Length: 246
Ligand SMILES: [Zn+2]
Image 1 (cartoon, rainbow, N blue to C red):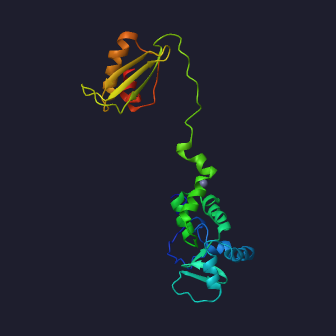
Image 2: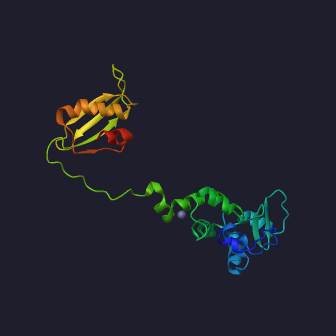
Image 3: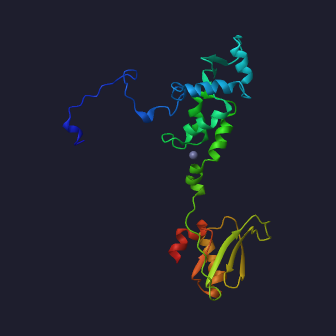
């Protein structure tokens, strides 16, 4: 505000058509003209490829022989084939176009739907969604930066315990048939030194507090507190209750 107050600003609305200097980021990423307008080489290559393209050769041949085909959604303009006003992209050019729409500096590696939407604004080919999805699946940059692919840290080996019940691992085993007492879950505690295993029957909806109680009843009274516990970070093992208890 301090900076702006030095100026006597008057904000005036300017119509889009008079606003010649446009904001680059608000523009569509690519459009037919950027690809073809001043590129006669590419223009020629498209025309050559239509004749061999599995998807377009028939329709292109029909339309180039000046036959008026009313029911088709296609038309030819300056020797280029269009489908409902969208430029038809021959087989070999698809990858280049997708790369431009997905990986170029201003396109920012969007997902399949956004990339397809971007492409559909000006170009057309059959099964576009499938081609784009295959391309994005193979994109190294996307694979590297996806949160699910990121490693949480370096894997380190666990210290080897020197005596029994110094270090234990714990987990739940589920999906068991109900016992007569109504238990369908097992709380499994294994001593990492000698692999002694304690199986405690419980229920699937066991809480952190109940887990602790079982731990004290079945482990602590016999072996004391371990110095370390290995778990899968289940909320019942890492929740507030456990930390405050320790
Ligand atoms: Zn990507």
